Length: 314
Image 1 (tube, rainbow, N blue to C red):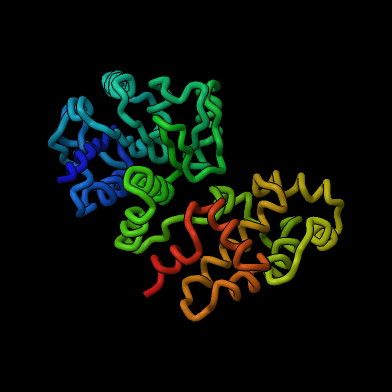
Image 2 (tube, rainbow, N blue to C red):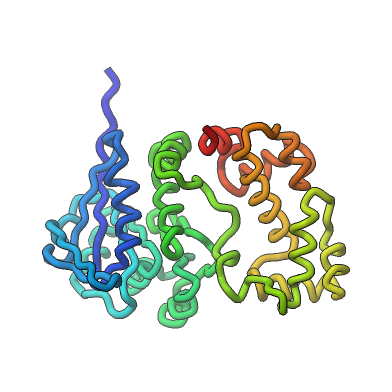
């Protein structure tokens, strides 16, 4: 008889003042998983009452820091920026030394950085706090565009909903893509989102008075056509080199990477319509062939168009 896999213990550490949304993401993914794969505990410094960033909402937590002692994964949700309690930092260091996987959501990355767990590693946080993380912790390589960064034993995610992306990714890493898709479908959320944080940063939005507005509007309306960087430059009446600099400044990616991102976002929308063939999705989004669509989809999302469609259509 095959031995049943051991239950994976997840401890969610609520630091004062915790971002309630971040905390509930982790508890929803791992505390309601439903297949016995995870056992989740919410803990605080000494247990008891924990303040949150939501006015009028205070949490009562039963477990204390010793919940980290035997956790396989420790997740630190966002909290109001400032020095984290020294005892919490010591507990994170100890958990890391004994081999626990440590993850953060949003500003939870500041606690990991203060504990020294991000030194020499890539990491991310909410784009609004990325510069502060880089300034306060110069040994951390901050990627302000990533939705989440996996450094093996330490994983960080960007703000709010990006924490959900990361938690679903961890389910897939632990139990395979099928388990992650199943969990995402139950939560009525996409398994993967195209692109990174750059698409959500206000300064990266090409508004009417933006120098890239004409370029991005034209490209978005012509995704079915072959489009080159030279085509984009002509629309913006600028050189290809100037266009590249503008895209890096505005979207933190090259024009080509932005274009592929837009094609993939359009492909996801079309795939959710079960009446459109994969070949037609590839044609309409300018990705050419089903083979090319599959290659880009696998590279960007670590899944296939067919699997995505199966997960997000009735």
